[in-house]
Image 1 (cartoon, rainbow, N blue to C red):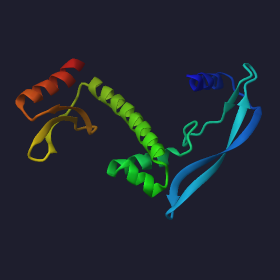
Image 2: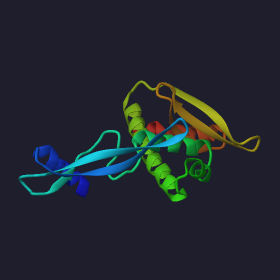
Image 3: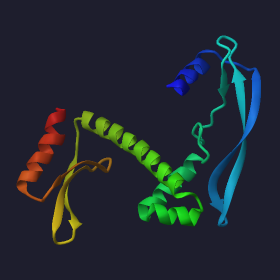
Image 4: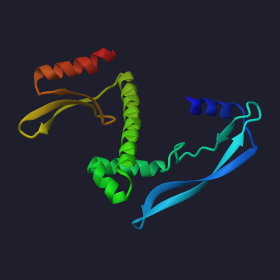
Length: 177
């Protein structure tokens, strides 16, 4: 909330007076198998109206983060393909850092996914795909409902029966009309 409030002040009152600057060390994608660190000069400005100090923001680096957005995304994708411990060992980053990055990126992706679902469900022209997937081959299956235009999963229901399909359609489609 404090960052949001500061951003609002920054948007309302522009300041060209540089208060000071700091150098921030930021990890980026590796080059030729070697870790790459960027040393970014971050300018801090003082607002003439409220006398508060604000930091410069960058599109490719989230505030108060020590990794670029693309490196965070890379770590997330690696964790999906293997374990957090394996990624931690390979990238020589503490386990807790990789875990924190993974869950924060996952939360961002979940938010994007929910926004996509809302926009899809607001649209009247849905093209649905109904399929079943094996959770445990030959033993457990789930019914999956997808929007074929966006590739978004609209919902999943246990079992692969007529009844589970009815529940899935009632929950995800009928509740949004």
